Each structure stands twice: as C-alpha cells, then as structure tokens.
Length: 150
Image (tube, rainbow, N blue to C red; front, side, top):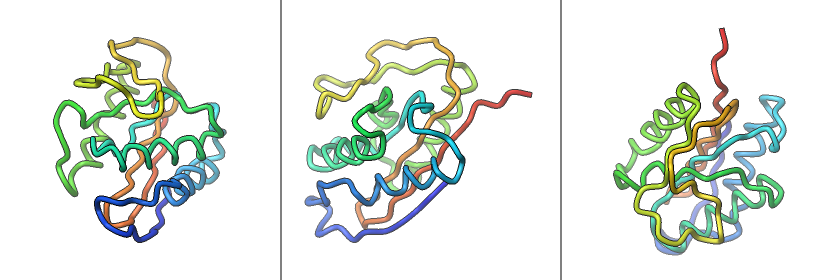
C-alpha cells in the first residue's frame, strides 16, 4: 500500500493531471515488486462527478502506462459513503479475488475516457487488484491486493 497528499483547489475542481494518485499506485506496485501488467482490475474512487472521474482516468492512465486494466466502479451501485468508501471498495476487491469474478458495473451508461468497465459479471482468473482512493481533500492511497493461495 502507498499514500501521499496533494491539496486540491476545491472539491469540485480536482487536479486533472492525476499525478498524485498515479504516484500512489506506482509506489504500491513497486513496494510489492509487482508490474503494472500483472494487475487484473482496479477499483477507482468513482465519485460519479465528471471532473473527479476524469482525474481518476488520468491517474490510471499514468499509473498503468496507457494499458489500464478493467475498471470496477464498486460505488456505482451503492453511492459514496464518505470516509467509509475505501473500506467498501476493499470488500469488493477481496470478494472479486476470492470468487475469481469481476462484478459488472452497475448504473454505468457511458464510461469516462473509454475506460473498460465490465457491464456483465465475468468469471476469470484474478491474481491482483488495486484499490485507489483519491479523496476530495487531496489524500491519495493505493492498495494492492493479491489472491490468497494456501
């Protein structure tokens, strides 16, 4: 896992470059010794606010060198739960890895920046998932999760 901070100008006007959250993802991958190409899916912040969703897309593009894995917007079906949102995102990622299933994106009509969002539930081998949180106050964290294989 990794974290950093970069103050946003306001909650409605994030830094659209995505540099700070991308740095958190890259650091989490580097610390784990895992290449970006090994990540099977990512759960982004997914505020459903266009400026913030574009900032997430920019961060993922930077973090994954233009080869963004499937994006699972876990909060699309339940909404934003403030400070508890990342915990819910973690649960979604853990369940995806446990059941080797990418959940379909609920209520997704037109993904930002052409992100690959599964519309149907897909069973497939999953080894790594990243949970990215780019908070409106400028705090960023990325957590890399791995499938448990006893």
